[in-house]
Length: 421
Image 1 (tube, rainbow, N blue to C red):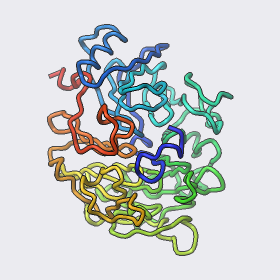
Image 2: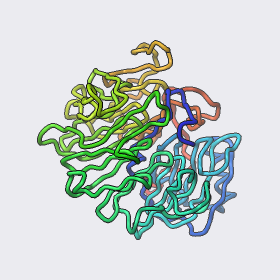
Image 3: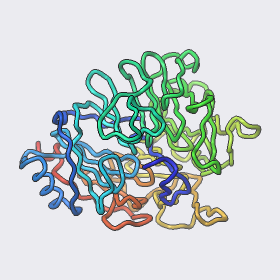
Image 4: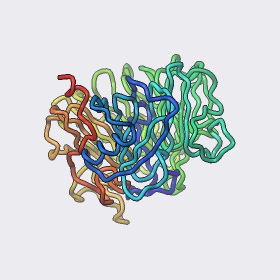
């Protein structure tokens, strides 16, 4: 997906950031030098047949993990390759129907999927392929199907994040974002940086005690559509003594999960993304009256009871310790609620929920949460995968739709853990 051209019914081009910050860990490595692509009808039988014809019959094939990112749902197999649902990506050319099949062509320990794909090898080097309109990749080509290095990031990469074709990397004690932004931890005032996150044209860095955000040029963030322009530059104001466990970054906001299981959010509050019941239109976070964007807002409704956090486009979701799922922010893809009875903008195009709302239709038998661009998934205690939200990229169902209620997703192979039992 090219930044700024895919609307997805959410009002602007948005980005997922659970998978943006953390890649998929590949326990068994992809076969070197192999890259092929095929399409097939959805469903486990068709998927199994297509994979068998592509890779050869393999009765030991099983799904190690599920990667939910951008507008895709991808399954990582124990042989190291991926099977992805979604109709437009650098997994291959646009095909008439999902899913796509892609054999990752190099040996990678971690995989990052946006509109581009990046992989990190055992020696911590990162390669990417896909769009290169802004020259962030080490090639003169505007689009490449061959993995190449990053143009301005030297040496091994300690942490990496990808949103669409925008990246942030921590390397050699410095934070690099999208090729044009470079800051050392001492400049950020953080000491030793532990994590990086990437949004649409901006990035954040953090350790357990602080968060600093800035854009690719001039320490500012600019979302492609000037109507939704949002700028962050400098440290996020956190409560005294707060210790951060995880950093998650979305397109216009970010959230942290603290060591004591609470959630704090910051950034543009126009989409009710803070989760504390308030909202504020801040087109420039450093302008007068917009100091709230640079402060972390405590999501009090959730208390200190959060097991997992996911930040999507202009919405966020959490999995609480009791197994329940709660979401807030932009409900354009019905990822928060199936009912449009929330705050409706005058245009009628944006529906907001400023406080966490429980998805009662998901029950409480959930053990993991994964968030994409405008969709989300949970893994049930019995191993089933249930997903809901925006389906414009056909990642949830074969027929394109603006949204889908929670539905059980067929797995292209048995779970590895189930096979071992």
